[in-house]
Image 1 (cartoon, rainbow, N blue to C red):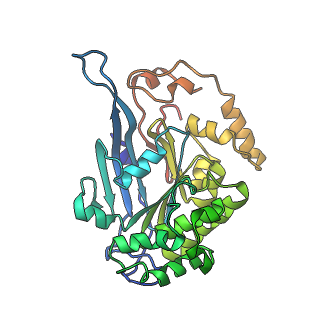
Image 2 (image 1 turned 60 degrees about the horizontal axis):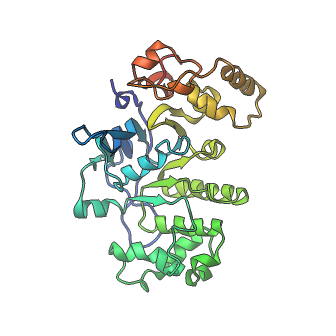
Image 3 (image 1 turned 90 degrees about the vertical axis):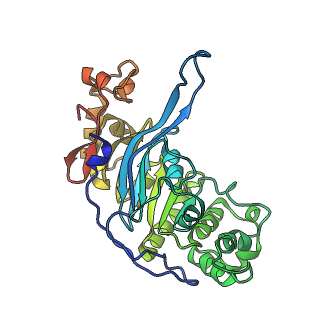
Length: 353
């Protein structure tokens, strides 16, 4: 049984038509089903051989990752640094090649798409980068930065022709028209991220991977950027994969949440189910570090945290959290857990949850 078989149904809808002006998100005629479906996704990197005649070994970055995102929905993807969060986002966008699994976008299998079809697809799928300081070309002014994808994809014939759309995009993200003639170094981090969001919106995508979009920003401006993304979702019906390690931010922006540990999704479901009733020991560990105003929930988390101590690191084919799990048993060493339903829109990969 694979993780893919455990993903429940999703609801949502979006509609629209292709246009050369305005900010409406384009949508295909068919709007049934999830906008994105990932099944059994795997990515591995080759390591060195132990000997000249030996077999090459591999590091499994992602292992059997499966989830769906509904139209107009935000799925928050949470995990520690190095858990594979950014790799998932870039693999979905076909910036990294997978070694297993399938990626279906708007009802079409894009796993092996290439050439011109892939180029056209990228108009519908965009990326908001983590670092607003390095993601903008310092030699280009804001007008050129936002207009470039419009020119490259043939939406407009020249940078001058793109000006009305660029000004409309700047206005939508809360930036003045005068910003168009300025350069990235003349803006704060929050302003740069708004410019990055405007660039991502230029091609009217239906799906955006937001890769730690507020982690490099001051706390005072994080809420402003998150609120802007929520407004854009409500207005344009865009779906987001929101990658973060800040659980408070994820709770604010996401309708559903997936917890990633060492390249595997260990828990996924509705936001309130994950935050109020976390079942996987890894999820409980992450949430125990987040301030909780509700004393009942706080006490329950503390009780689970005191349940037991860690066991030696896992080896072989067992659970990847074995080395830090207070609930570990013999079956955890022998078999990899798979996602199983634990309630309405709540799935957990743990033998002892």
